[in-house]
Image (cartoon, rainbow, N blue to C red):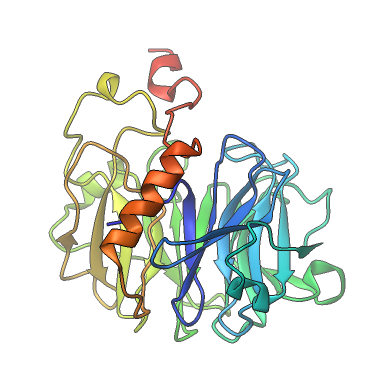
Length: 321
């Protein structure tokens, strides 16, 4: 296990690099790290960014949401296409990589976030609040909604969010509270074809419907063969009181996998008190040099990269009961 201070990781097509958002509380933008954790570059900074998707056909293109996280449907958040010179990743003597940032959504179109690139690199699926509700849209991956056009994929007075496009291109998985729109804390997994047909809720075998209706099941990602879904959920309950976990967005979340076809084969991958959120799959062949990783970890701690737990007041304290 290696530790990178960030969230929303996305792998390059060869698996050699990880793009991620370095610090959601600061204007840290987007960073790239070697998959073995031995080198980190900053490619975009001075703006809050979250939700990263690396193009699987262009190794020099990364997509991200630019703007504040966890805000209303009408808050200005834009989808950005970030391009850079891939050859700069061969230079370990620099920490900053130059990049070009192109906005793909209009500034007045509301809260646009969580882009996921199609496997052919031509389109993006993302969540947008432009209708007054947070639903899913598909847009041209190069021109955005300005010249390439945009189409609405889901519609309704609920939250459809955090989409993931399957590597075979056949399905889009996402989290939604459409089964209980009045509760903004309960999400389940839904699947839909990119053309908008055959929308269905994934019924997870071994979890009764009443239980599933109350839980938060999100951060869904397809396996490289498109047969499994990796996700975060509190299906096992909280293993510690929230008061003992003050430095997290939400005091829950273990990782699970389940089969896409029928919701069978549920497996719990982690078991601890912390939120294991925003996971992804790694399909590369990165080799890990333990001594080198240990030396890099020591360097990071000395340079101030150790975790400080500087989050806002947790929601469970500020709720009115």
